[in-house]
Image (tube, rainbow, N blue to C red; front, side, top):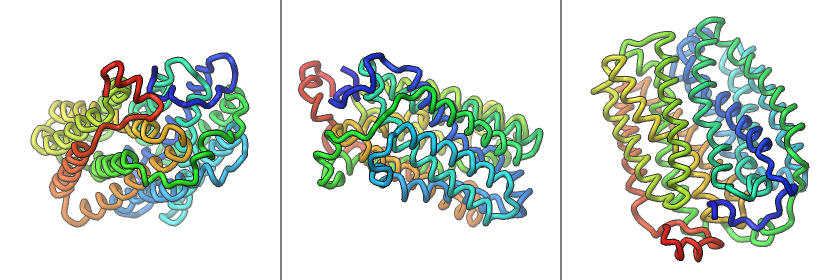
Length: 407
């Protein structure tokens, strides 16, 4: 039985709706591309707005803070609204946020645009994975990996293409293109998603208790917070890092980010399959890989080839973190999918904000070397945090896993 098939919620229709899964994957792709695009065009953004690279990087922190604060409350705010309509509205918000960003003339308007993007991102992430068991019954674990693959595909296609467009036509054009794409996403969601009314089943039945009372939920939040903070403290400033360490500029940055993203996609599906059986051990391996990549960048990344090798390792390591986070969440609290997904999204996006903010402070104040060492130390702590405690087991599938010998 797949990892998330333990849910006893009814599906939306008799047929398996893989077209809906694809559209949800497109949703995560676009919100992550919008969130992460400043990474690829950080230098031209800072030059165009007349602010430092660290300040421009804080725009990621703005998005992350908003998403972190809003995501845990998404299920309460939307109440009984049809989830399809909510996701269409989120796509329209995403379009508005990117348009505001494209028109910004200073940091204040830029921050406003990023606030709107953060609201859209929180809504998409709080619902996308939680809706999977209502759309497919067979191979729901694969469906989760497909939905979450939008993160890695954003690195492969979204950010590199946005970076390339920004280098060719200006960074504002990249955000304008995202606004148009978000409008198309809204139409696709309206067409391919079935009606998804709020359910009055398991989530509400156990919704009065605190999710933080569950040890597995707490352990997962600590591990995810540490590893995501470490990653984004460094990755937010990967363009200036590559320019400084490797001497790569322009299209070369896009190519290196493409390499990173390609291996991130492979890692997403590999980690999804592994985490379905041993989520804690999988996250441990990923955290160790991120630690090694951050330590190796200033040592091996002094040439374009060396930088590519480091980014391969980095992509293989971080590419699986998102799916591990989502699978940990649904295994830890399978009867409260929307609520626990929102909680994890809040922690995840809050960690993005914390990482990008702290990275900017360290990068501007102490330099690249201190930033990489600090991020590597935090990633090592994330690895250690996964070692303690018992394995994560979804209550509804614990007996089956015990019988099959899986963790």
